[in-house]
Amino acid sequence: MSRSCNEQETHLLLLKITNVKNIFFLLSFLIVSGSMSAQTLTPVAWESSVVVDENGDHRIVFEATMDKNWVIYSQHTKPDGPIPTEFIIETEGIELIGEVEEITKPKTEISEMFEIEVSKFSEKATFSQKFKPKGAKTVKANVTFMTCDNLRCIPPTTVDFEIKL
Image (cartoon, rainbow, N blue to C red):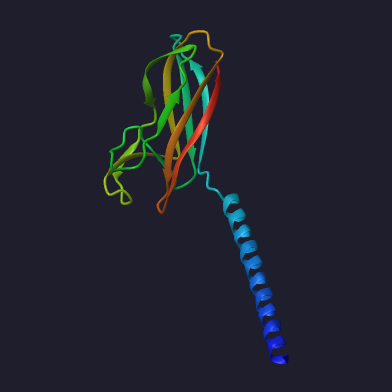
């Protein structure tokens, strides 16, 4: 009987150790997950504004500022390359004229990462959309873009804008 008691005690001790290990693993996972989400990369900042030029033409201006070594890509990329920058502008109360223009000229070169020619912006990029106001007080828009540095890319990100006219 004493042997059976020892086996039960050993089994209970092993269960306690296993539970402690499981709790330690769970806590470690939660700590690592929390620190990873706190370190989310945001290497691109966006601003928007409306300008009216000397001819009375209205433009929505979008400006991206990239951290050092980070780039975003042109709206006009090849299918096998990076995801292009894309703007969506709600047209309620405005009339869009033409397409979103790339005011900043992109740098075009062969990308080692994508192994094709890509057009990209570094440091700053300005985009502009001409429009006619038709009673709107604000314009809602968003931009979806992909950003990369020399080592990695971040999945496409969407930034929303609400622009006062």
